[in-house]
Length: 244
Image (cartoon, rainbow, N blue to C red; front, side, top):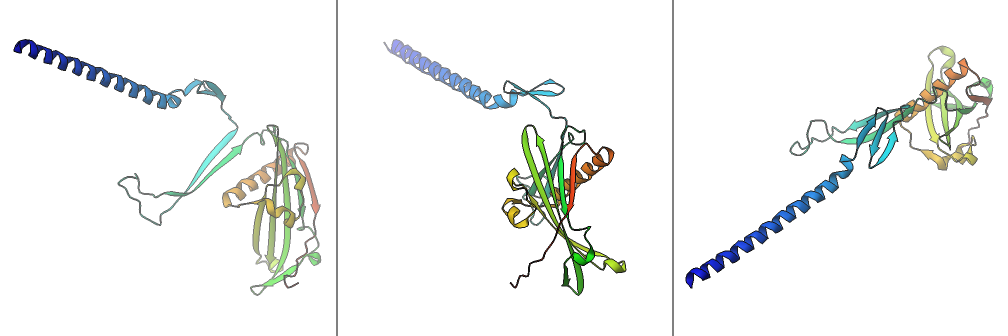
């Protein structure tokens, strides 16, 4: 009787161990399947051809006309904790992505550029401010850039105020301030007060990109005046008295 009871206990223990082992195997397999599902999006990326890529069953074509430049501003004010952050530079407190489209240079985007400036006006018509012991002659310039890109309208307006001193004695000094606007098509007015609600933050990188667009369009216009629409007209600048 004791032997049979012992065998029965051993059989029961074996069954329990087998069940535990089976449950463990099923849990491991299930966990592995879940991990594979999580990794699925990454593994579903495949290079189909030189100019296309597949992502989750869809094929995308590279835009070879874009040049993307990533700018990182690194903060050195505080030391980084190398226990969890590699390197010795610091965190990026400024991240900017600049995209340049070569379709403009290749003539596949038609631009309309309108300029209103006081720079060619007679000197006696320009306002003058006395500041820092100097007399500053003031000019302003508006430039409107418009194009239709991939079926959508794009409009950008820039404003620059120029102050020039000592122009006649050869030691010319220049100060400038800039603003950039992204107004709707119905607000393409060269009026600073009307454009103010559509102003965007200005950075040196943005101003440089706009300047390069301006230079590129002018170079294209010099070669072929039909490549872009360019209209330049004189403006009138009146400085309002802040005391009134």
